Length: 123
Image (cartoon, rainbow, N blue to C red; front, side, top):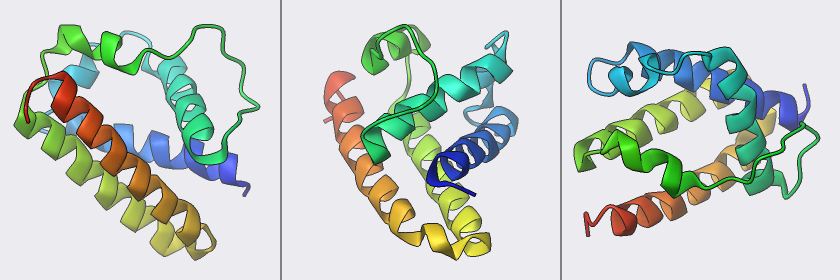
């Protein structure tokens, strides 16, 4: 399994949890074609973690703009982060060769947590 394969795997595993989550699942269940959305999210994380992607994409990423209509609450952001970190822990437990990539991912999550907190006025 390559790093890119693992990123896609983690993204898929996380969003399976997120869609079923009692607190934040409603945000994800409204996405009509989630299967086509997953590779786009994986592309975003490829760029964040590896600096490049081999996945096709045409639209630029405007992470903040696409989240505005969701009216995300501070607790929902916290829940998203908790589930993502849990997913990373579970997935690296079965694939320890990706431990360094997990650590990088955790630092990027901290960065984006700050971006979201400032953007949505939670700070």
